[in-house]
Length: 122
Image (tube, rainbow, N blue to C red; front, side, top):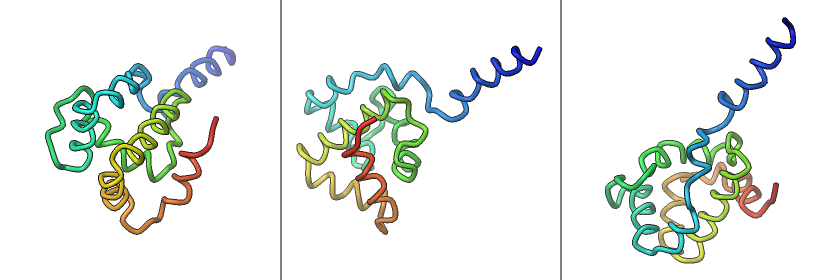
């Protein structure tokens, strides 16, 4: 009986502490390499356009927590996706990256931890 309880708890922990696995399947490379698509997602995050692209509204809702916790609830794949996306944003759209930083961390409270996460590896 103890084994069953431990198994159930072990299976439930990722569901409680991680974001939905549907985000693992997002083709980040496709988004980043399609300027129109990438701009659509960024515009959604920055309130410059609609959030009508796949998962864009969910991303926008989760983004403040992802930044505040340095992606603590992200799966390993999600951590890679966030790193890749933020790096692409900073390189391809530096002006939007500045707006992004101001919008989601206006006081710079999370900058050190989030930057360490972005340049880190798992």
